[in-house]
Amino acid sequence: MRGNKEQSTRLYYIDNLKIYLTILVILHHNAIAYSGSGPWSILDPGADEISFLLFTIFTTVNQAYFMGAFFLLAGYFTPRSLEKKGAKAFLIDRLIRLGIPILVYTTIIVNINGFILDSFVYSAPFRIRIGYNVGHLWFLQALLILSLIYVVWKAVSGRTAAKSPSWTYRGKFPPDVVLLVSVILLGMVTFGVRLIFPVGDWHLGIQPGHFAQYIFSFFVGILAYQGDWFDQLSRAQARRWGYAVIFMFMILFPMIVFGGVLEGGENLAKFEGGPYWQALAYSLWESAMLVGMVVFLISFFRERLNKTSKVTQFLAPNA
Image 1: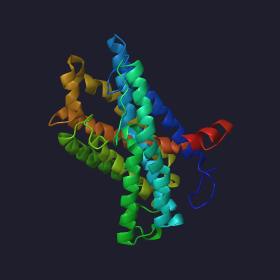
Image 2 (image 1 turned 60 degrees about the vertical axis):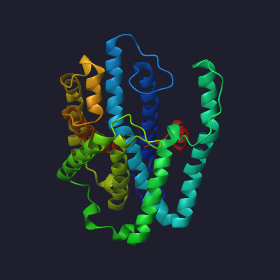
Image 3 (image 1 turned 60 degrees about the horizontal axis):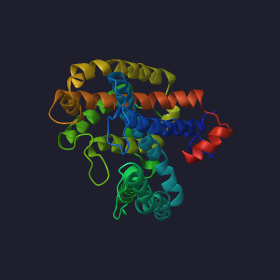
């Protein structure tokens, strides 16, 4: 049975989608540790090039969509929560649900991690970490900021879900041409941001090189709620974008080879940002993977995995 956002019925397929994405987060960071392809406290890469290549492809595909999907789902449930609670209660709830974990992490967890690393990895005396280091909870910080921006925008514009503009495609999923234009625009904006902030460049606890996608996904999630897009997405349209995902996956390895990644790390850096064709190609590829995977996964989980069990009932609220 499909859920309706106006009913109290729980959307089991979204629960299951979040579980899937959470598992990907864990596997993604394990892959970084065993490939050595990113910054991580503990690295144990294999000596062979094949392992590095396979892990890098795995993390590249994941990075293209899994955090964007999380932000989209967060955006999807934001309007309903705001309308139900009101601005004041909504912001207090956000501060409790997001702010307290950030506070615990930046004061306690970061020092537990530091003790483990100092004692067993770096073989150095333990030093207390004092300061604001949001670390792995950067996404909670981002959600807190984006939620605040949305509340301010709603207050200034005076709009409600019922007064949302016509271009939100109320009761109709956006057509393929709109999705394609979105892919191109998002890819170009991402490329522009990465001219200044390449992938791997951290500022204030975030990577600006990825944030065009995250901001886009969050506010598209809001539009998806207003337009009831999840229920309106057809199997045929989802299937087309599933084929697009397969095509994008197939061209990834040739793109890596022609981009010179196998010839040296300096060519890999060209994909991460700068005035290079590799950076433009990667930005467009990543945007296409985001849109294609999200469209396909929403339909797949809605049609095939809209059910629950004792295991998922435990995992869903703990995702």
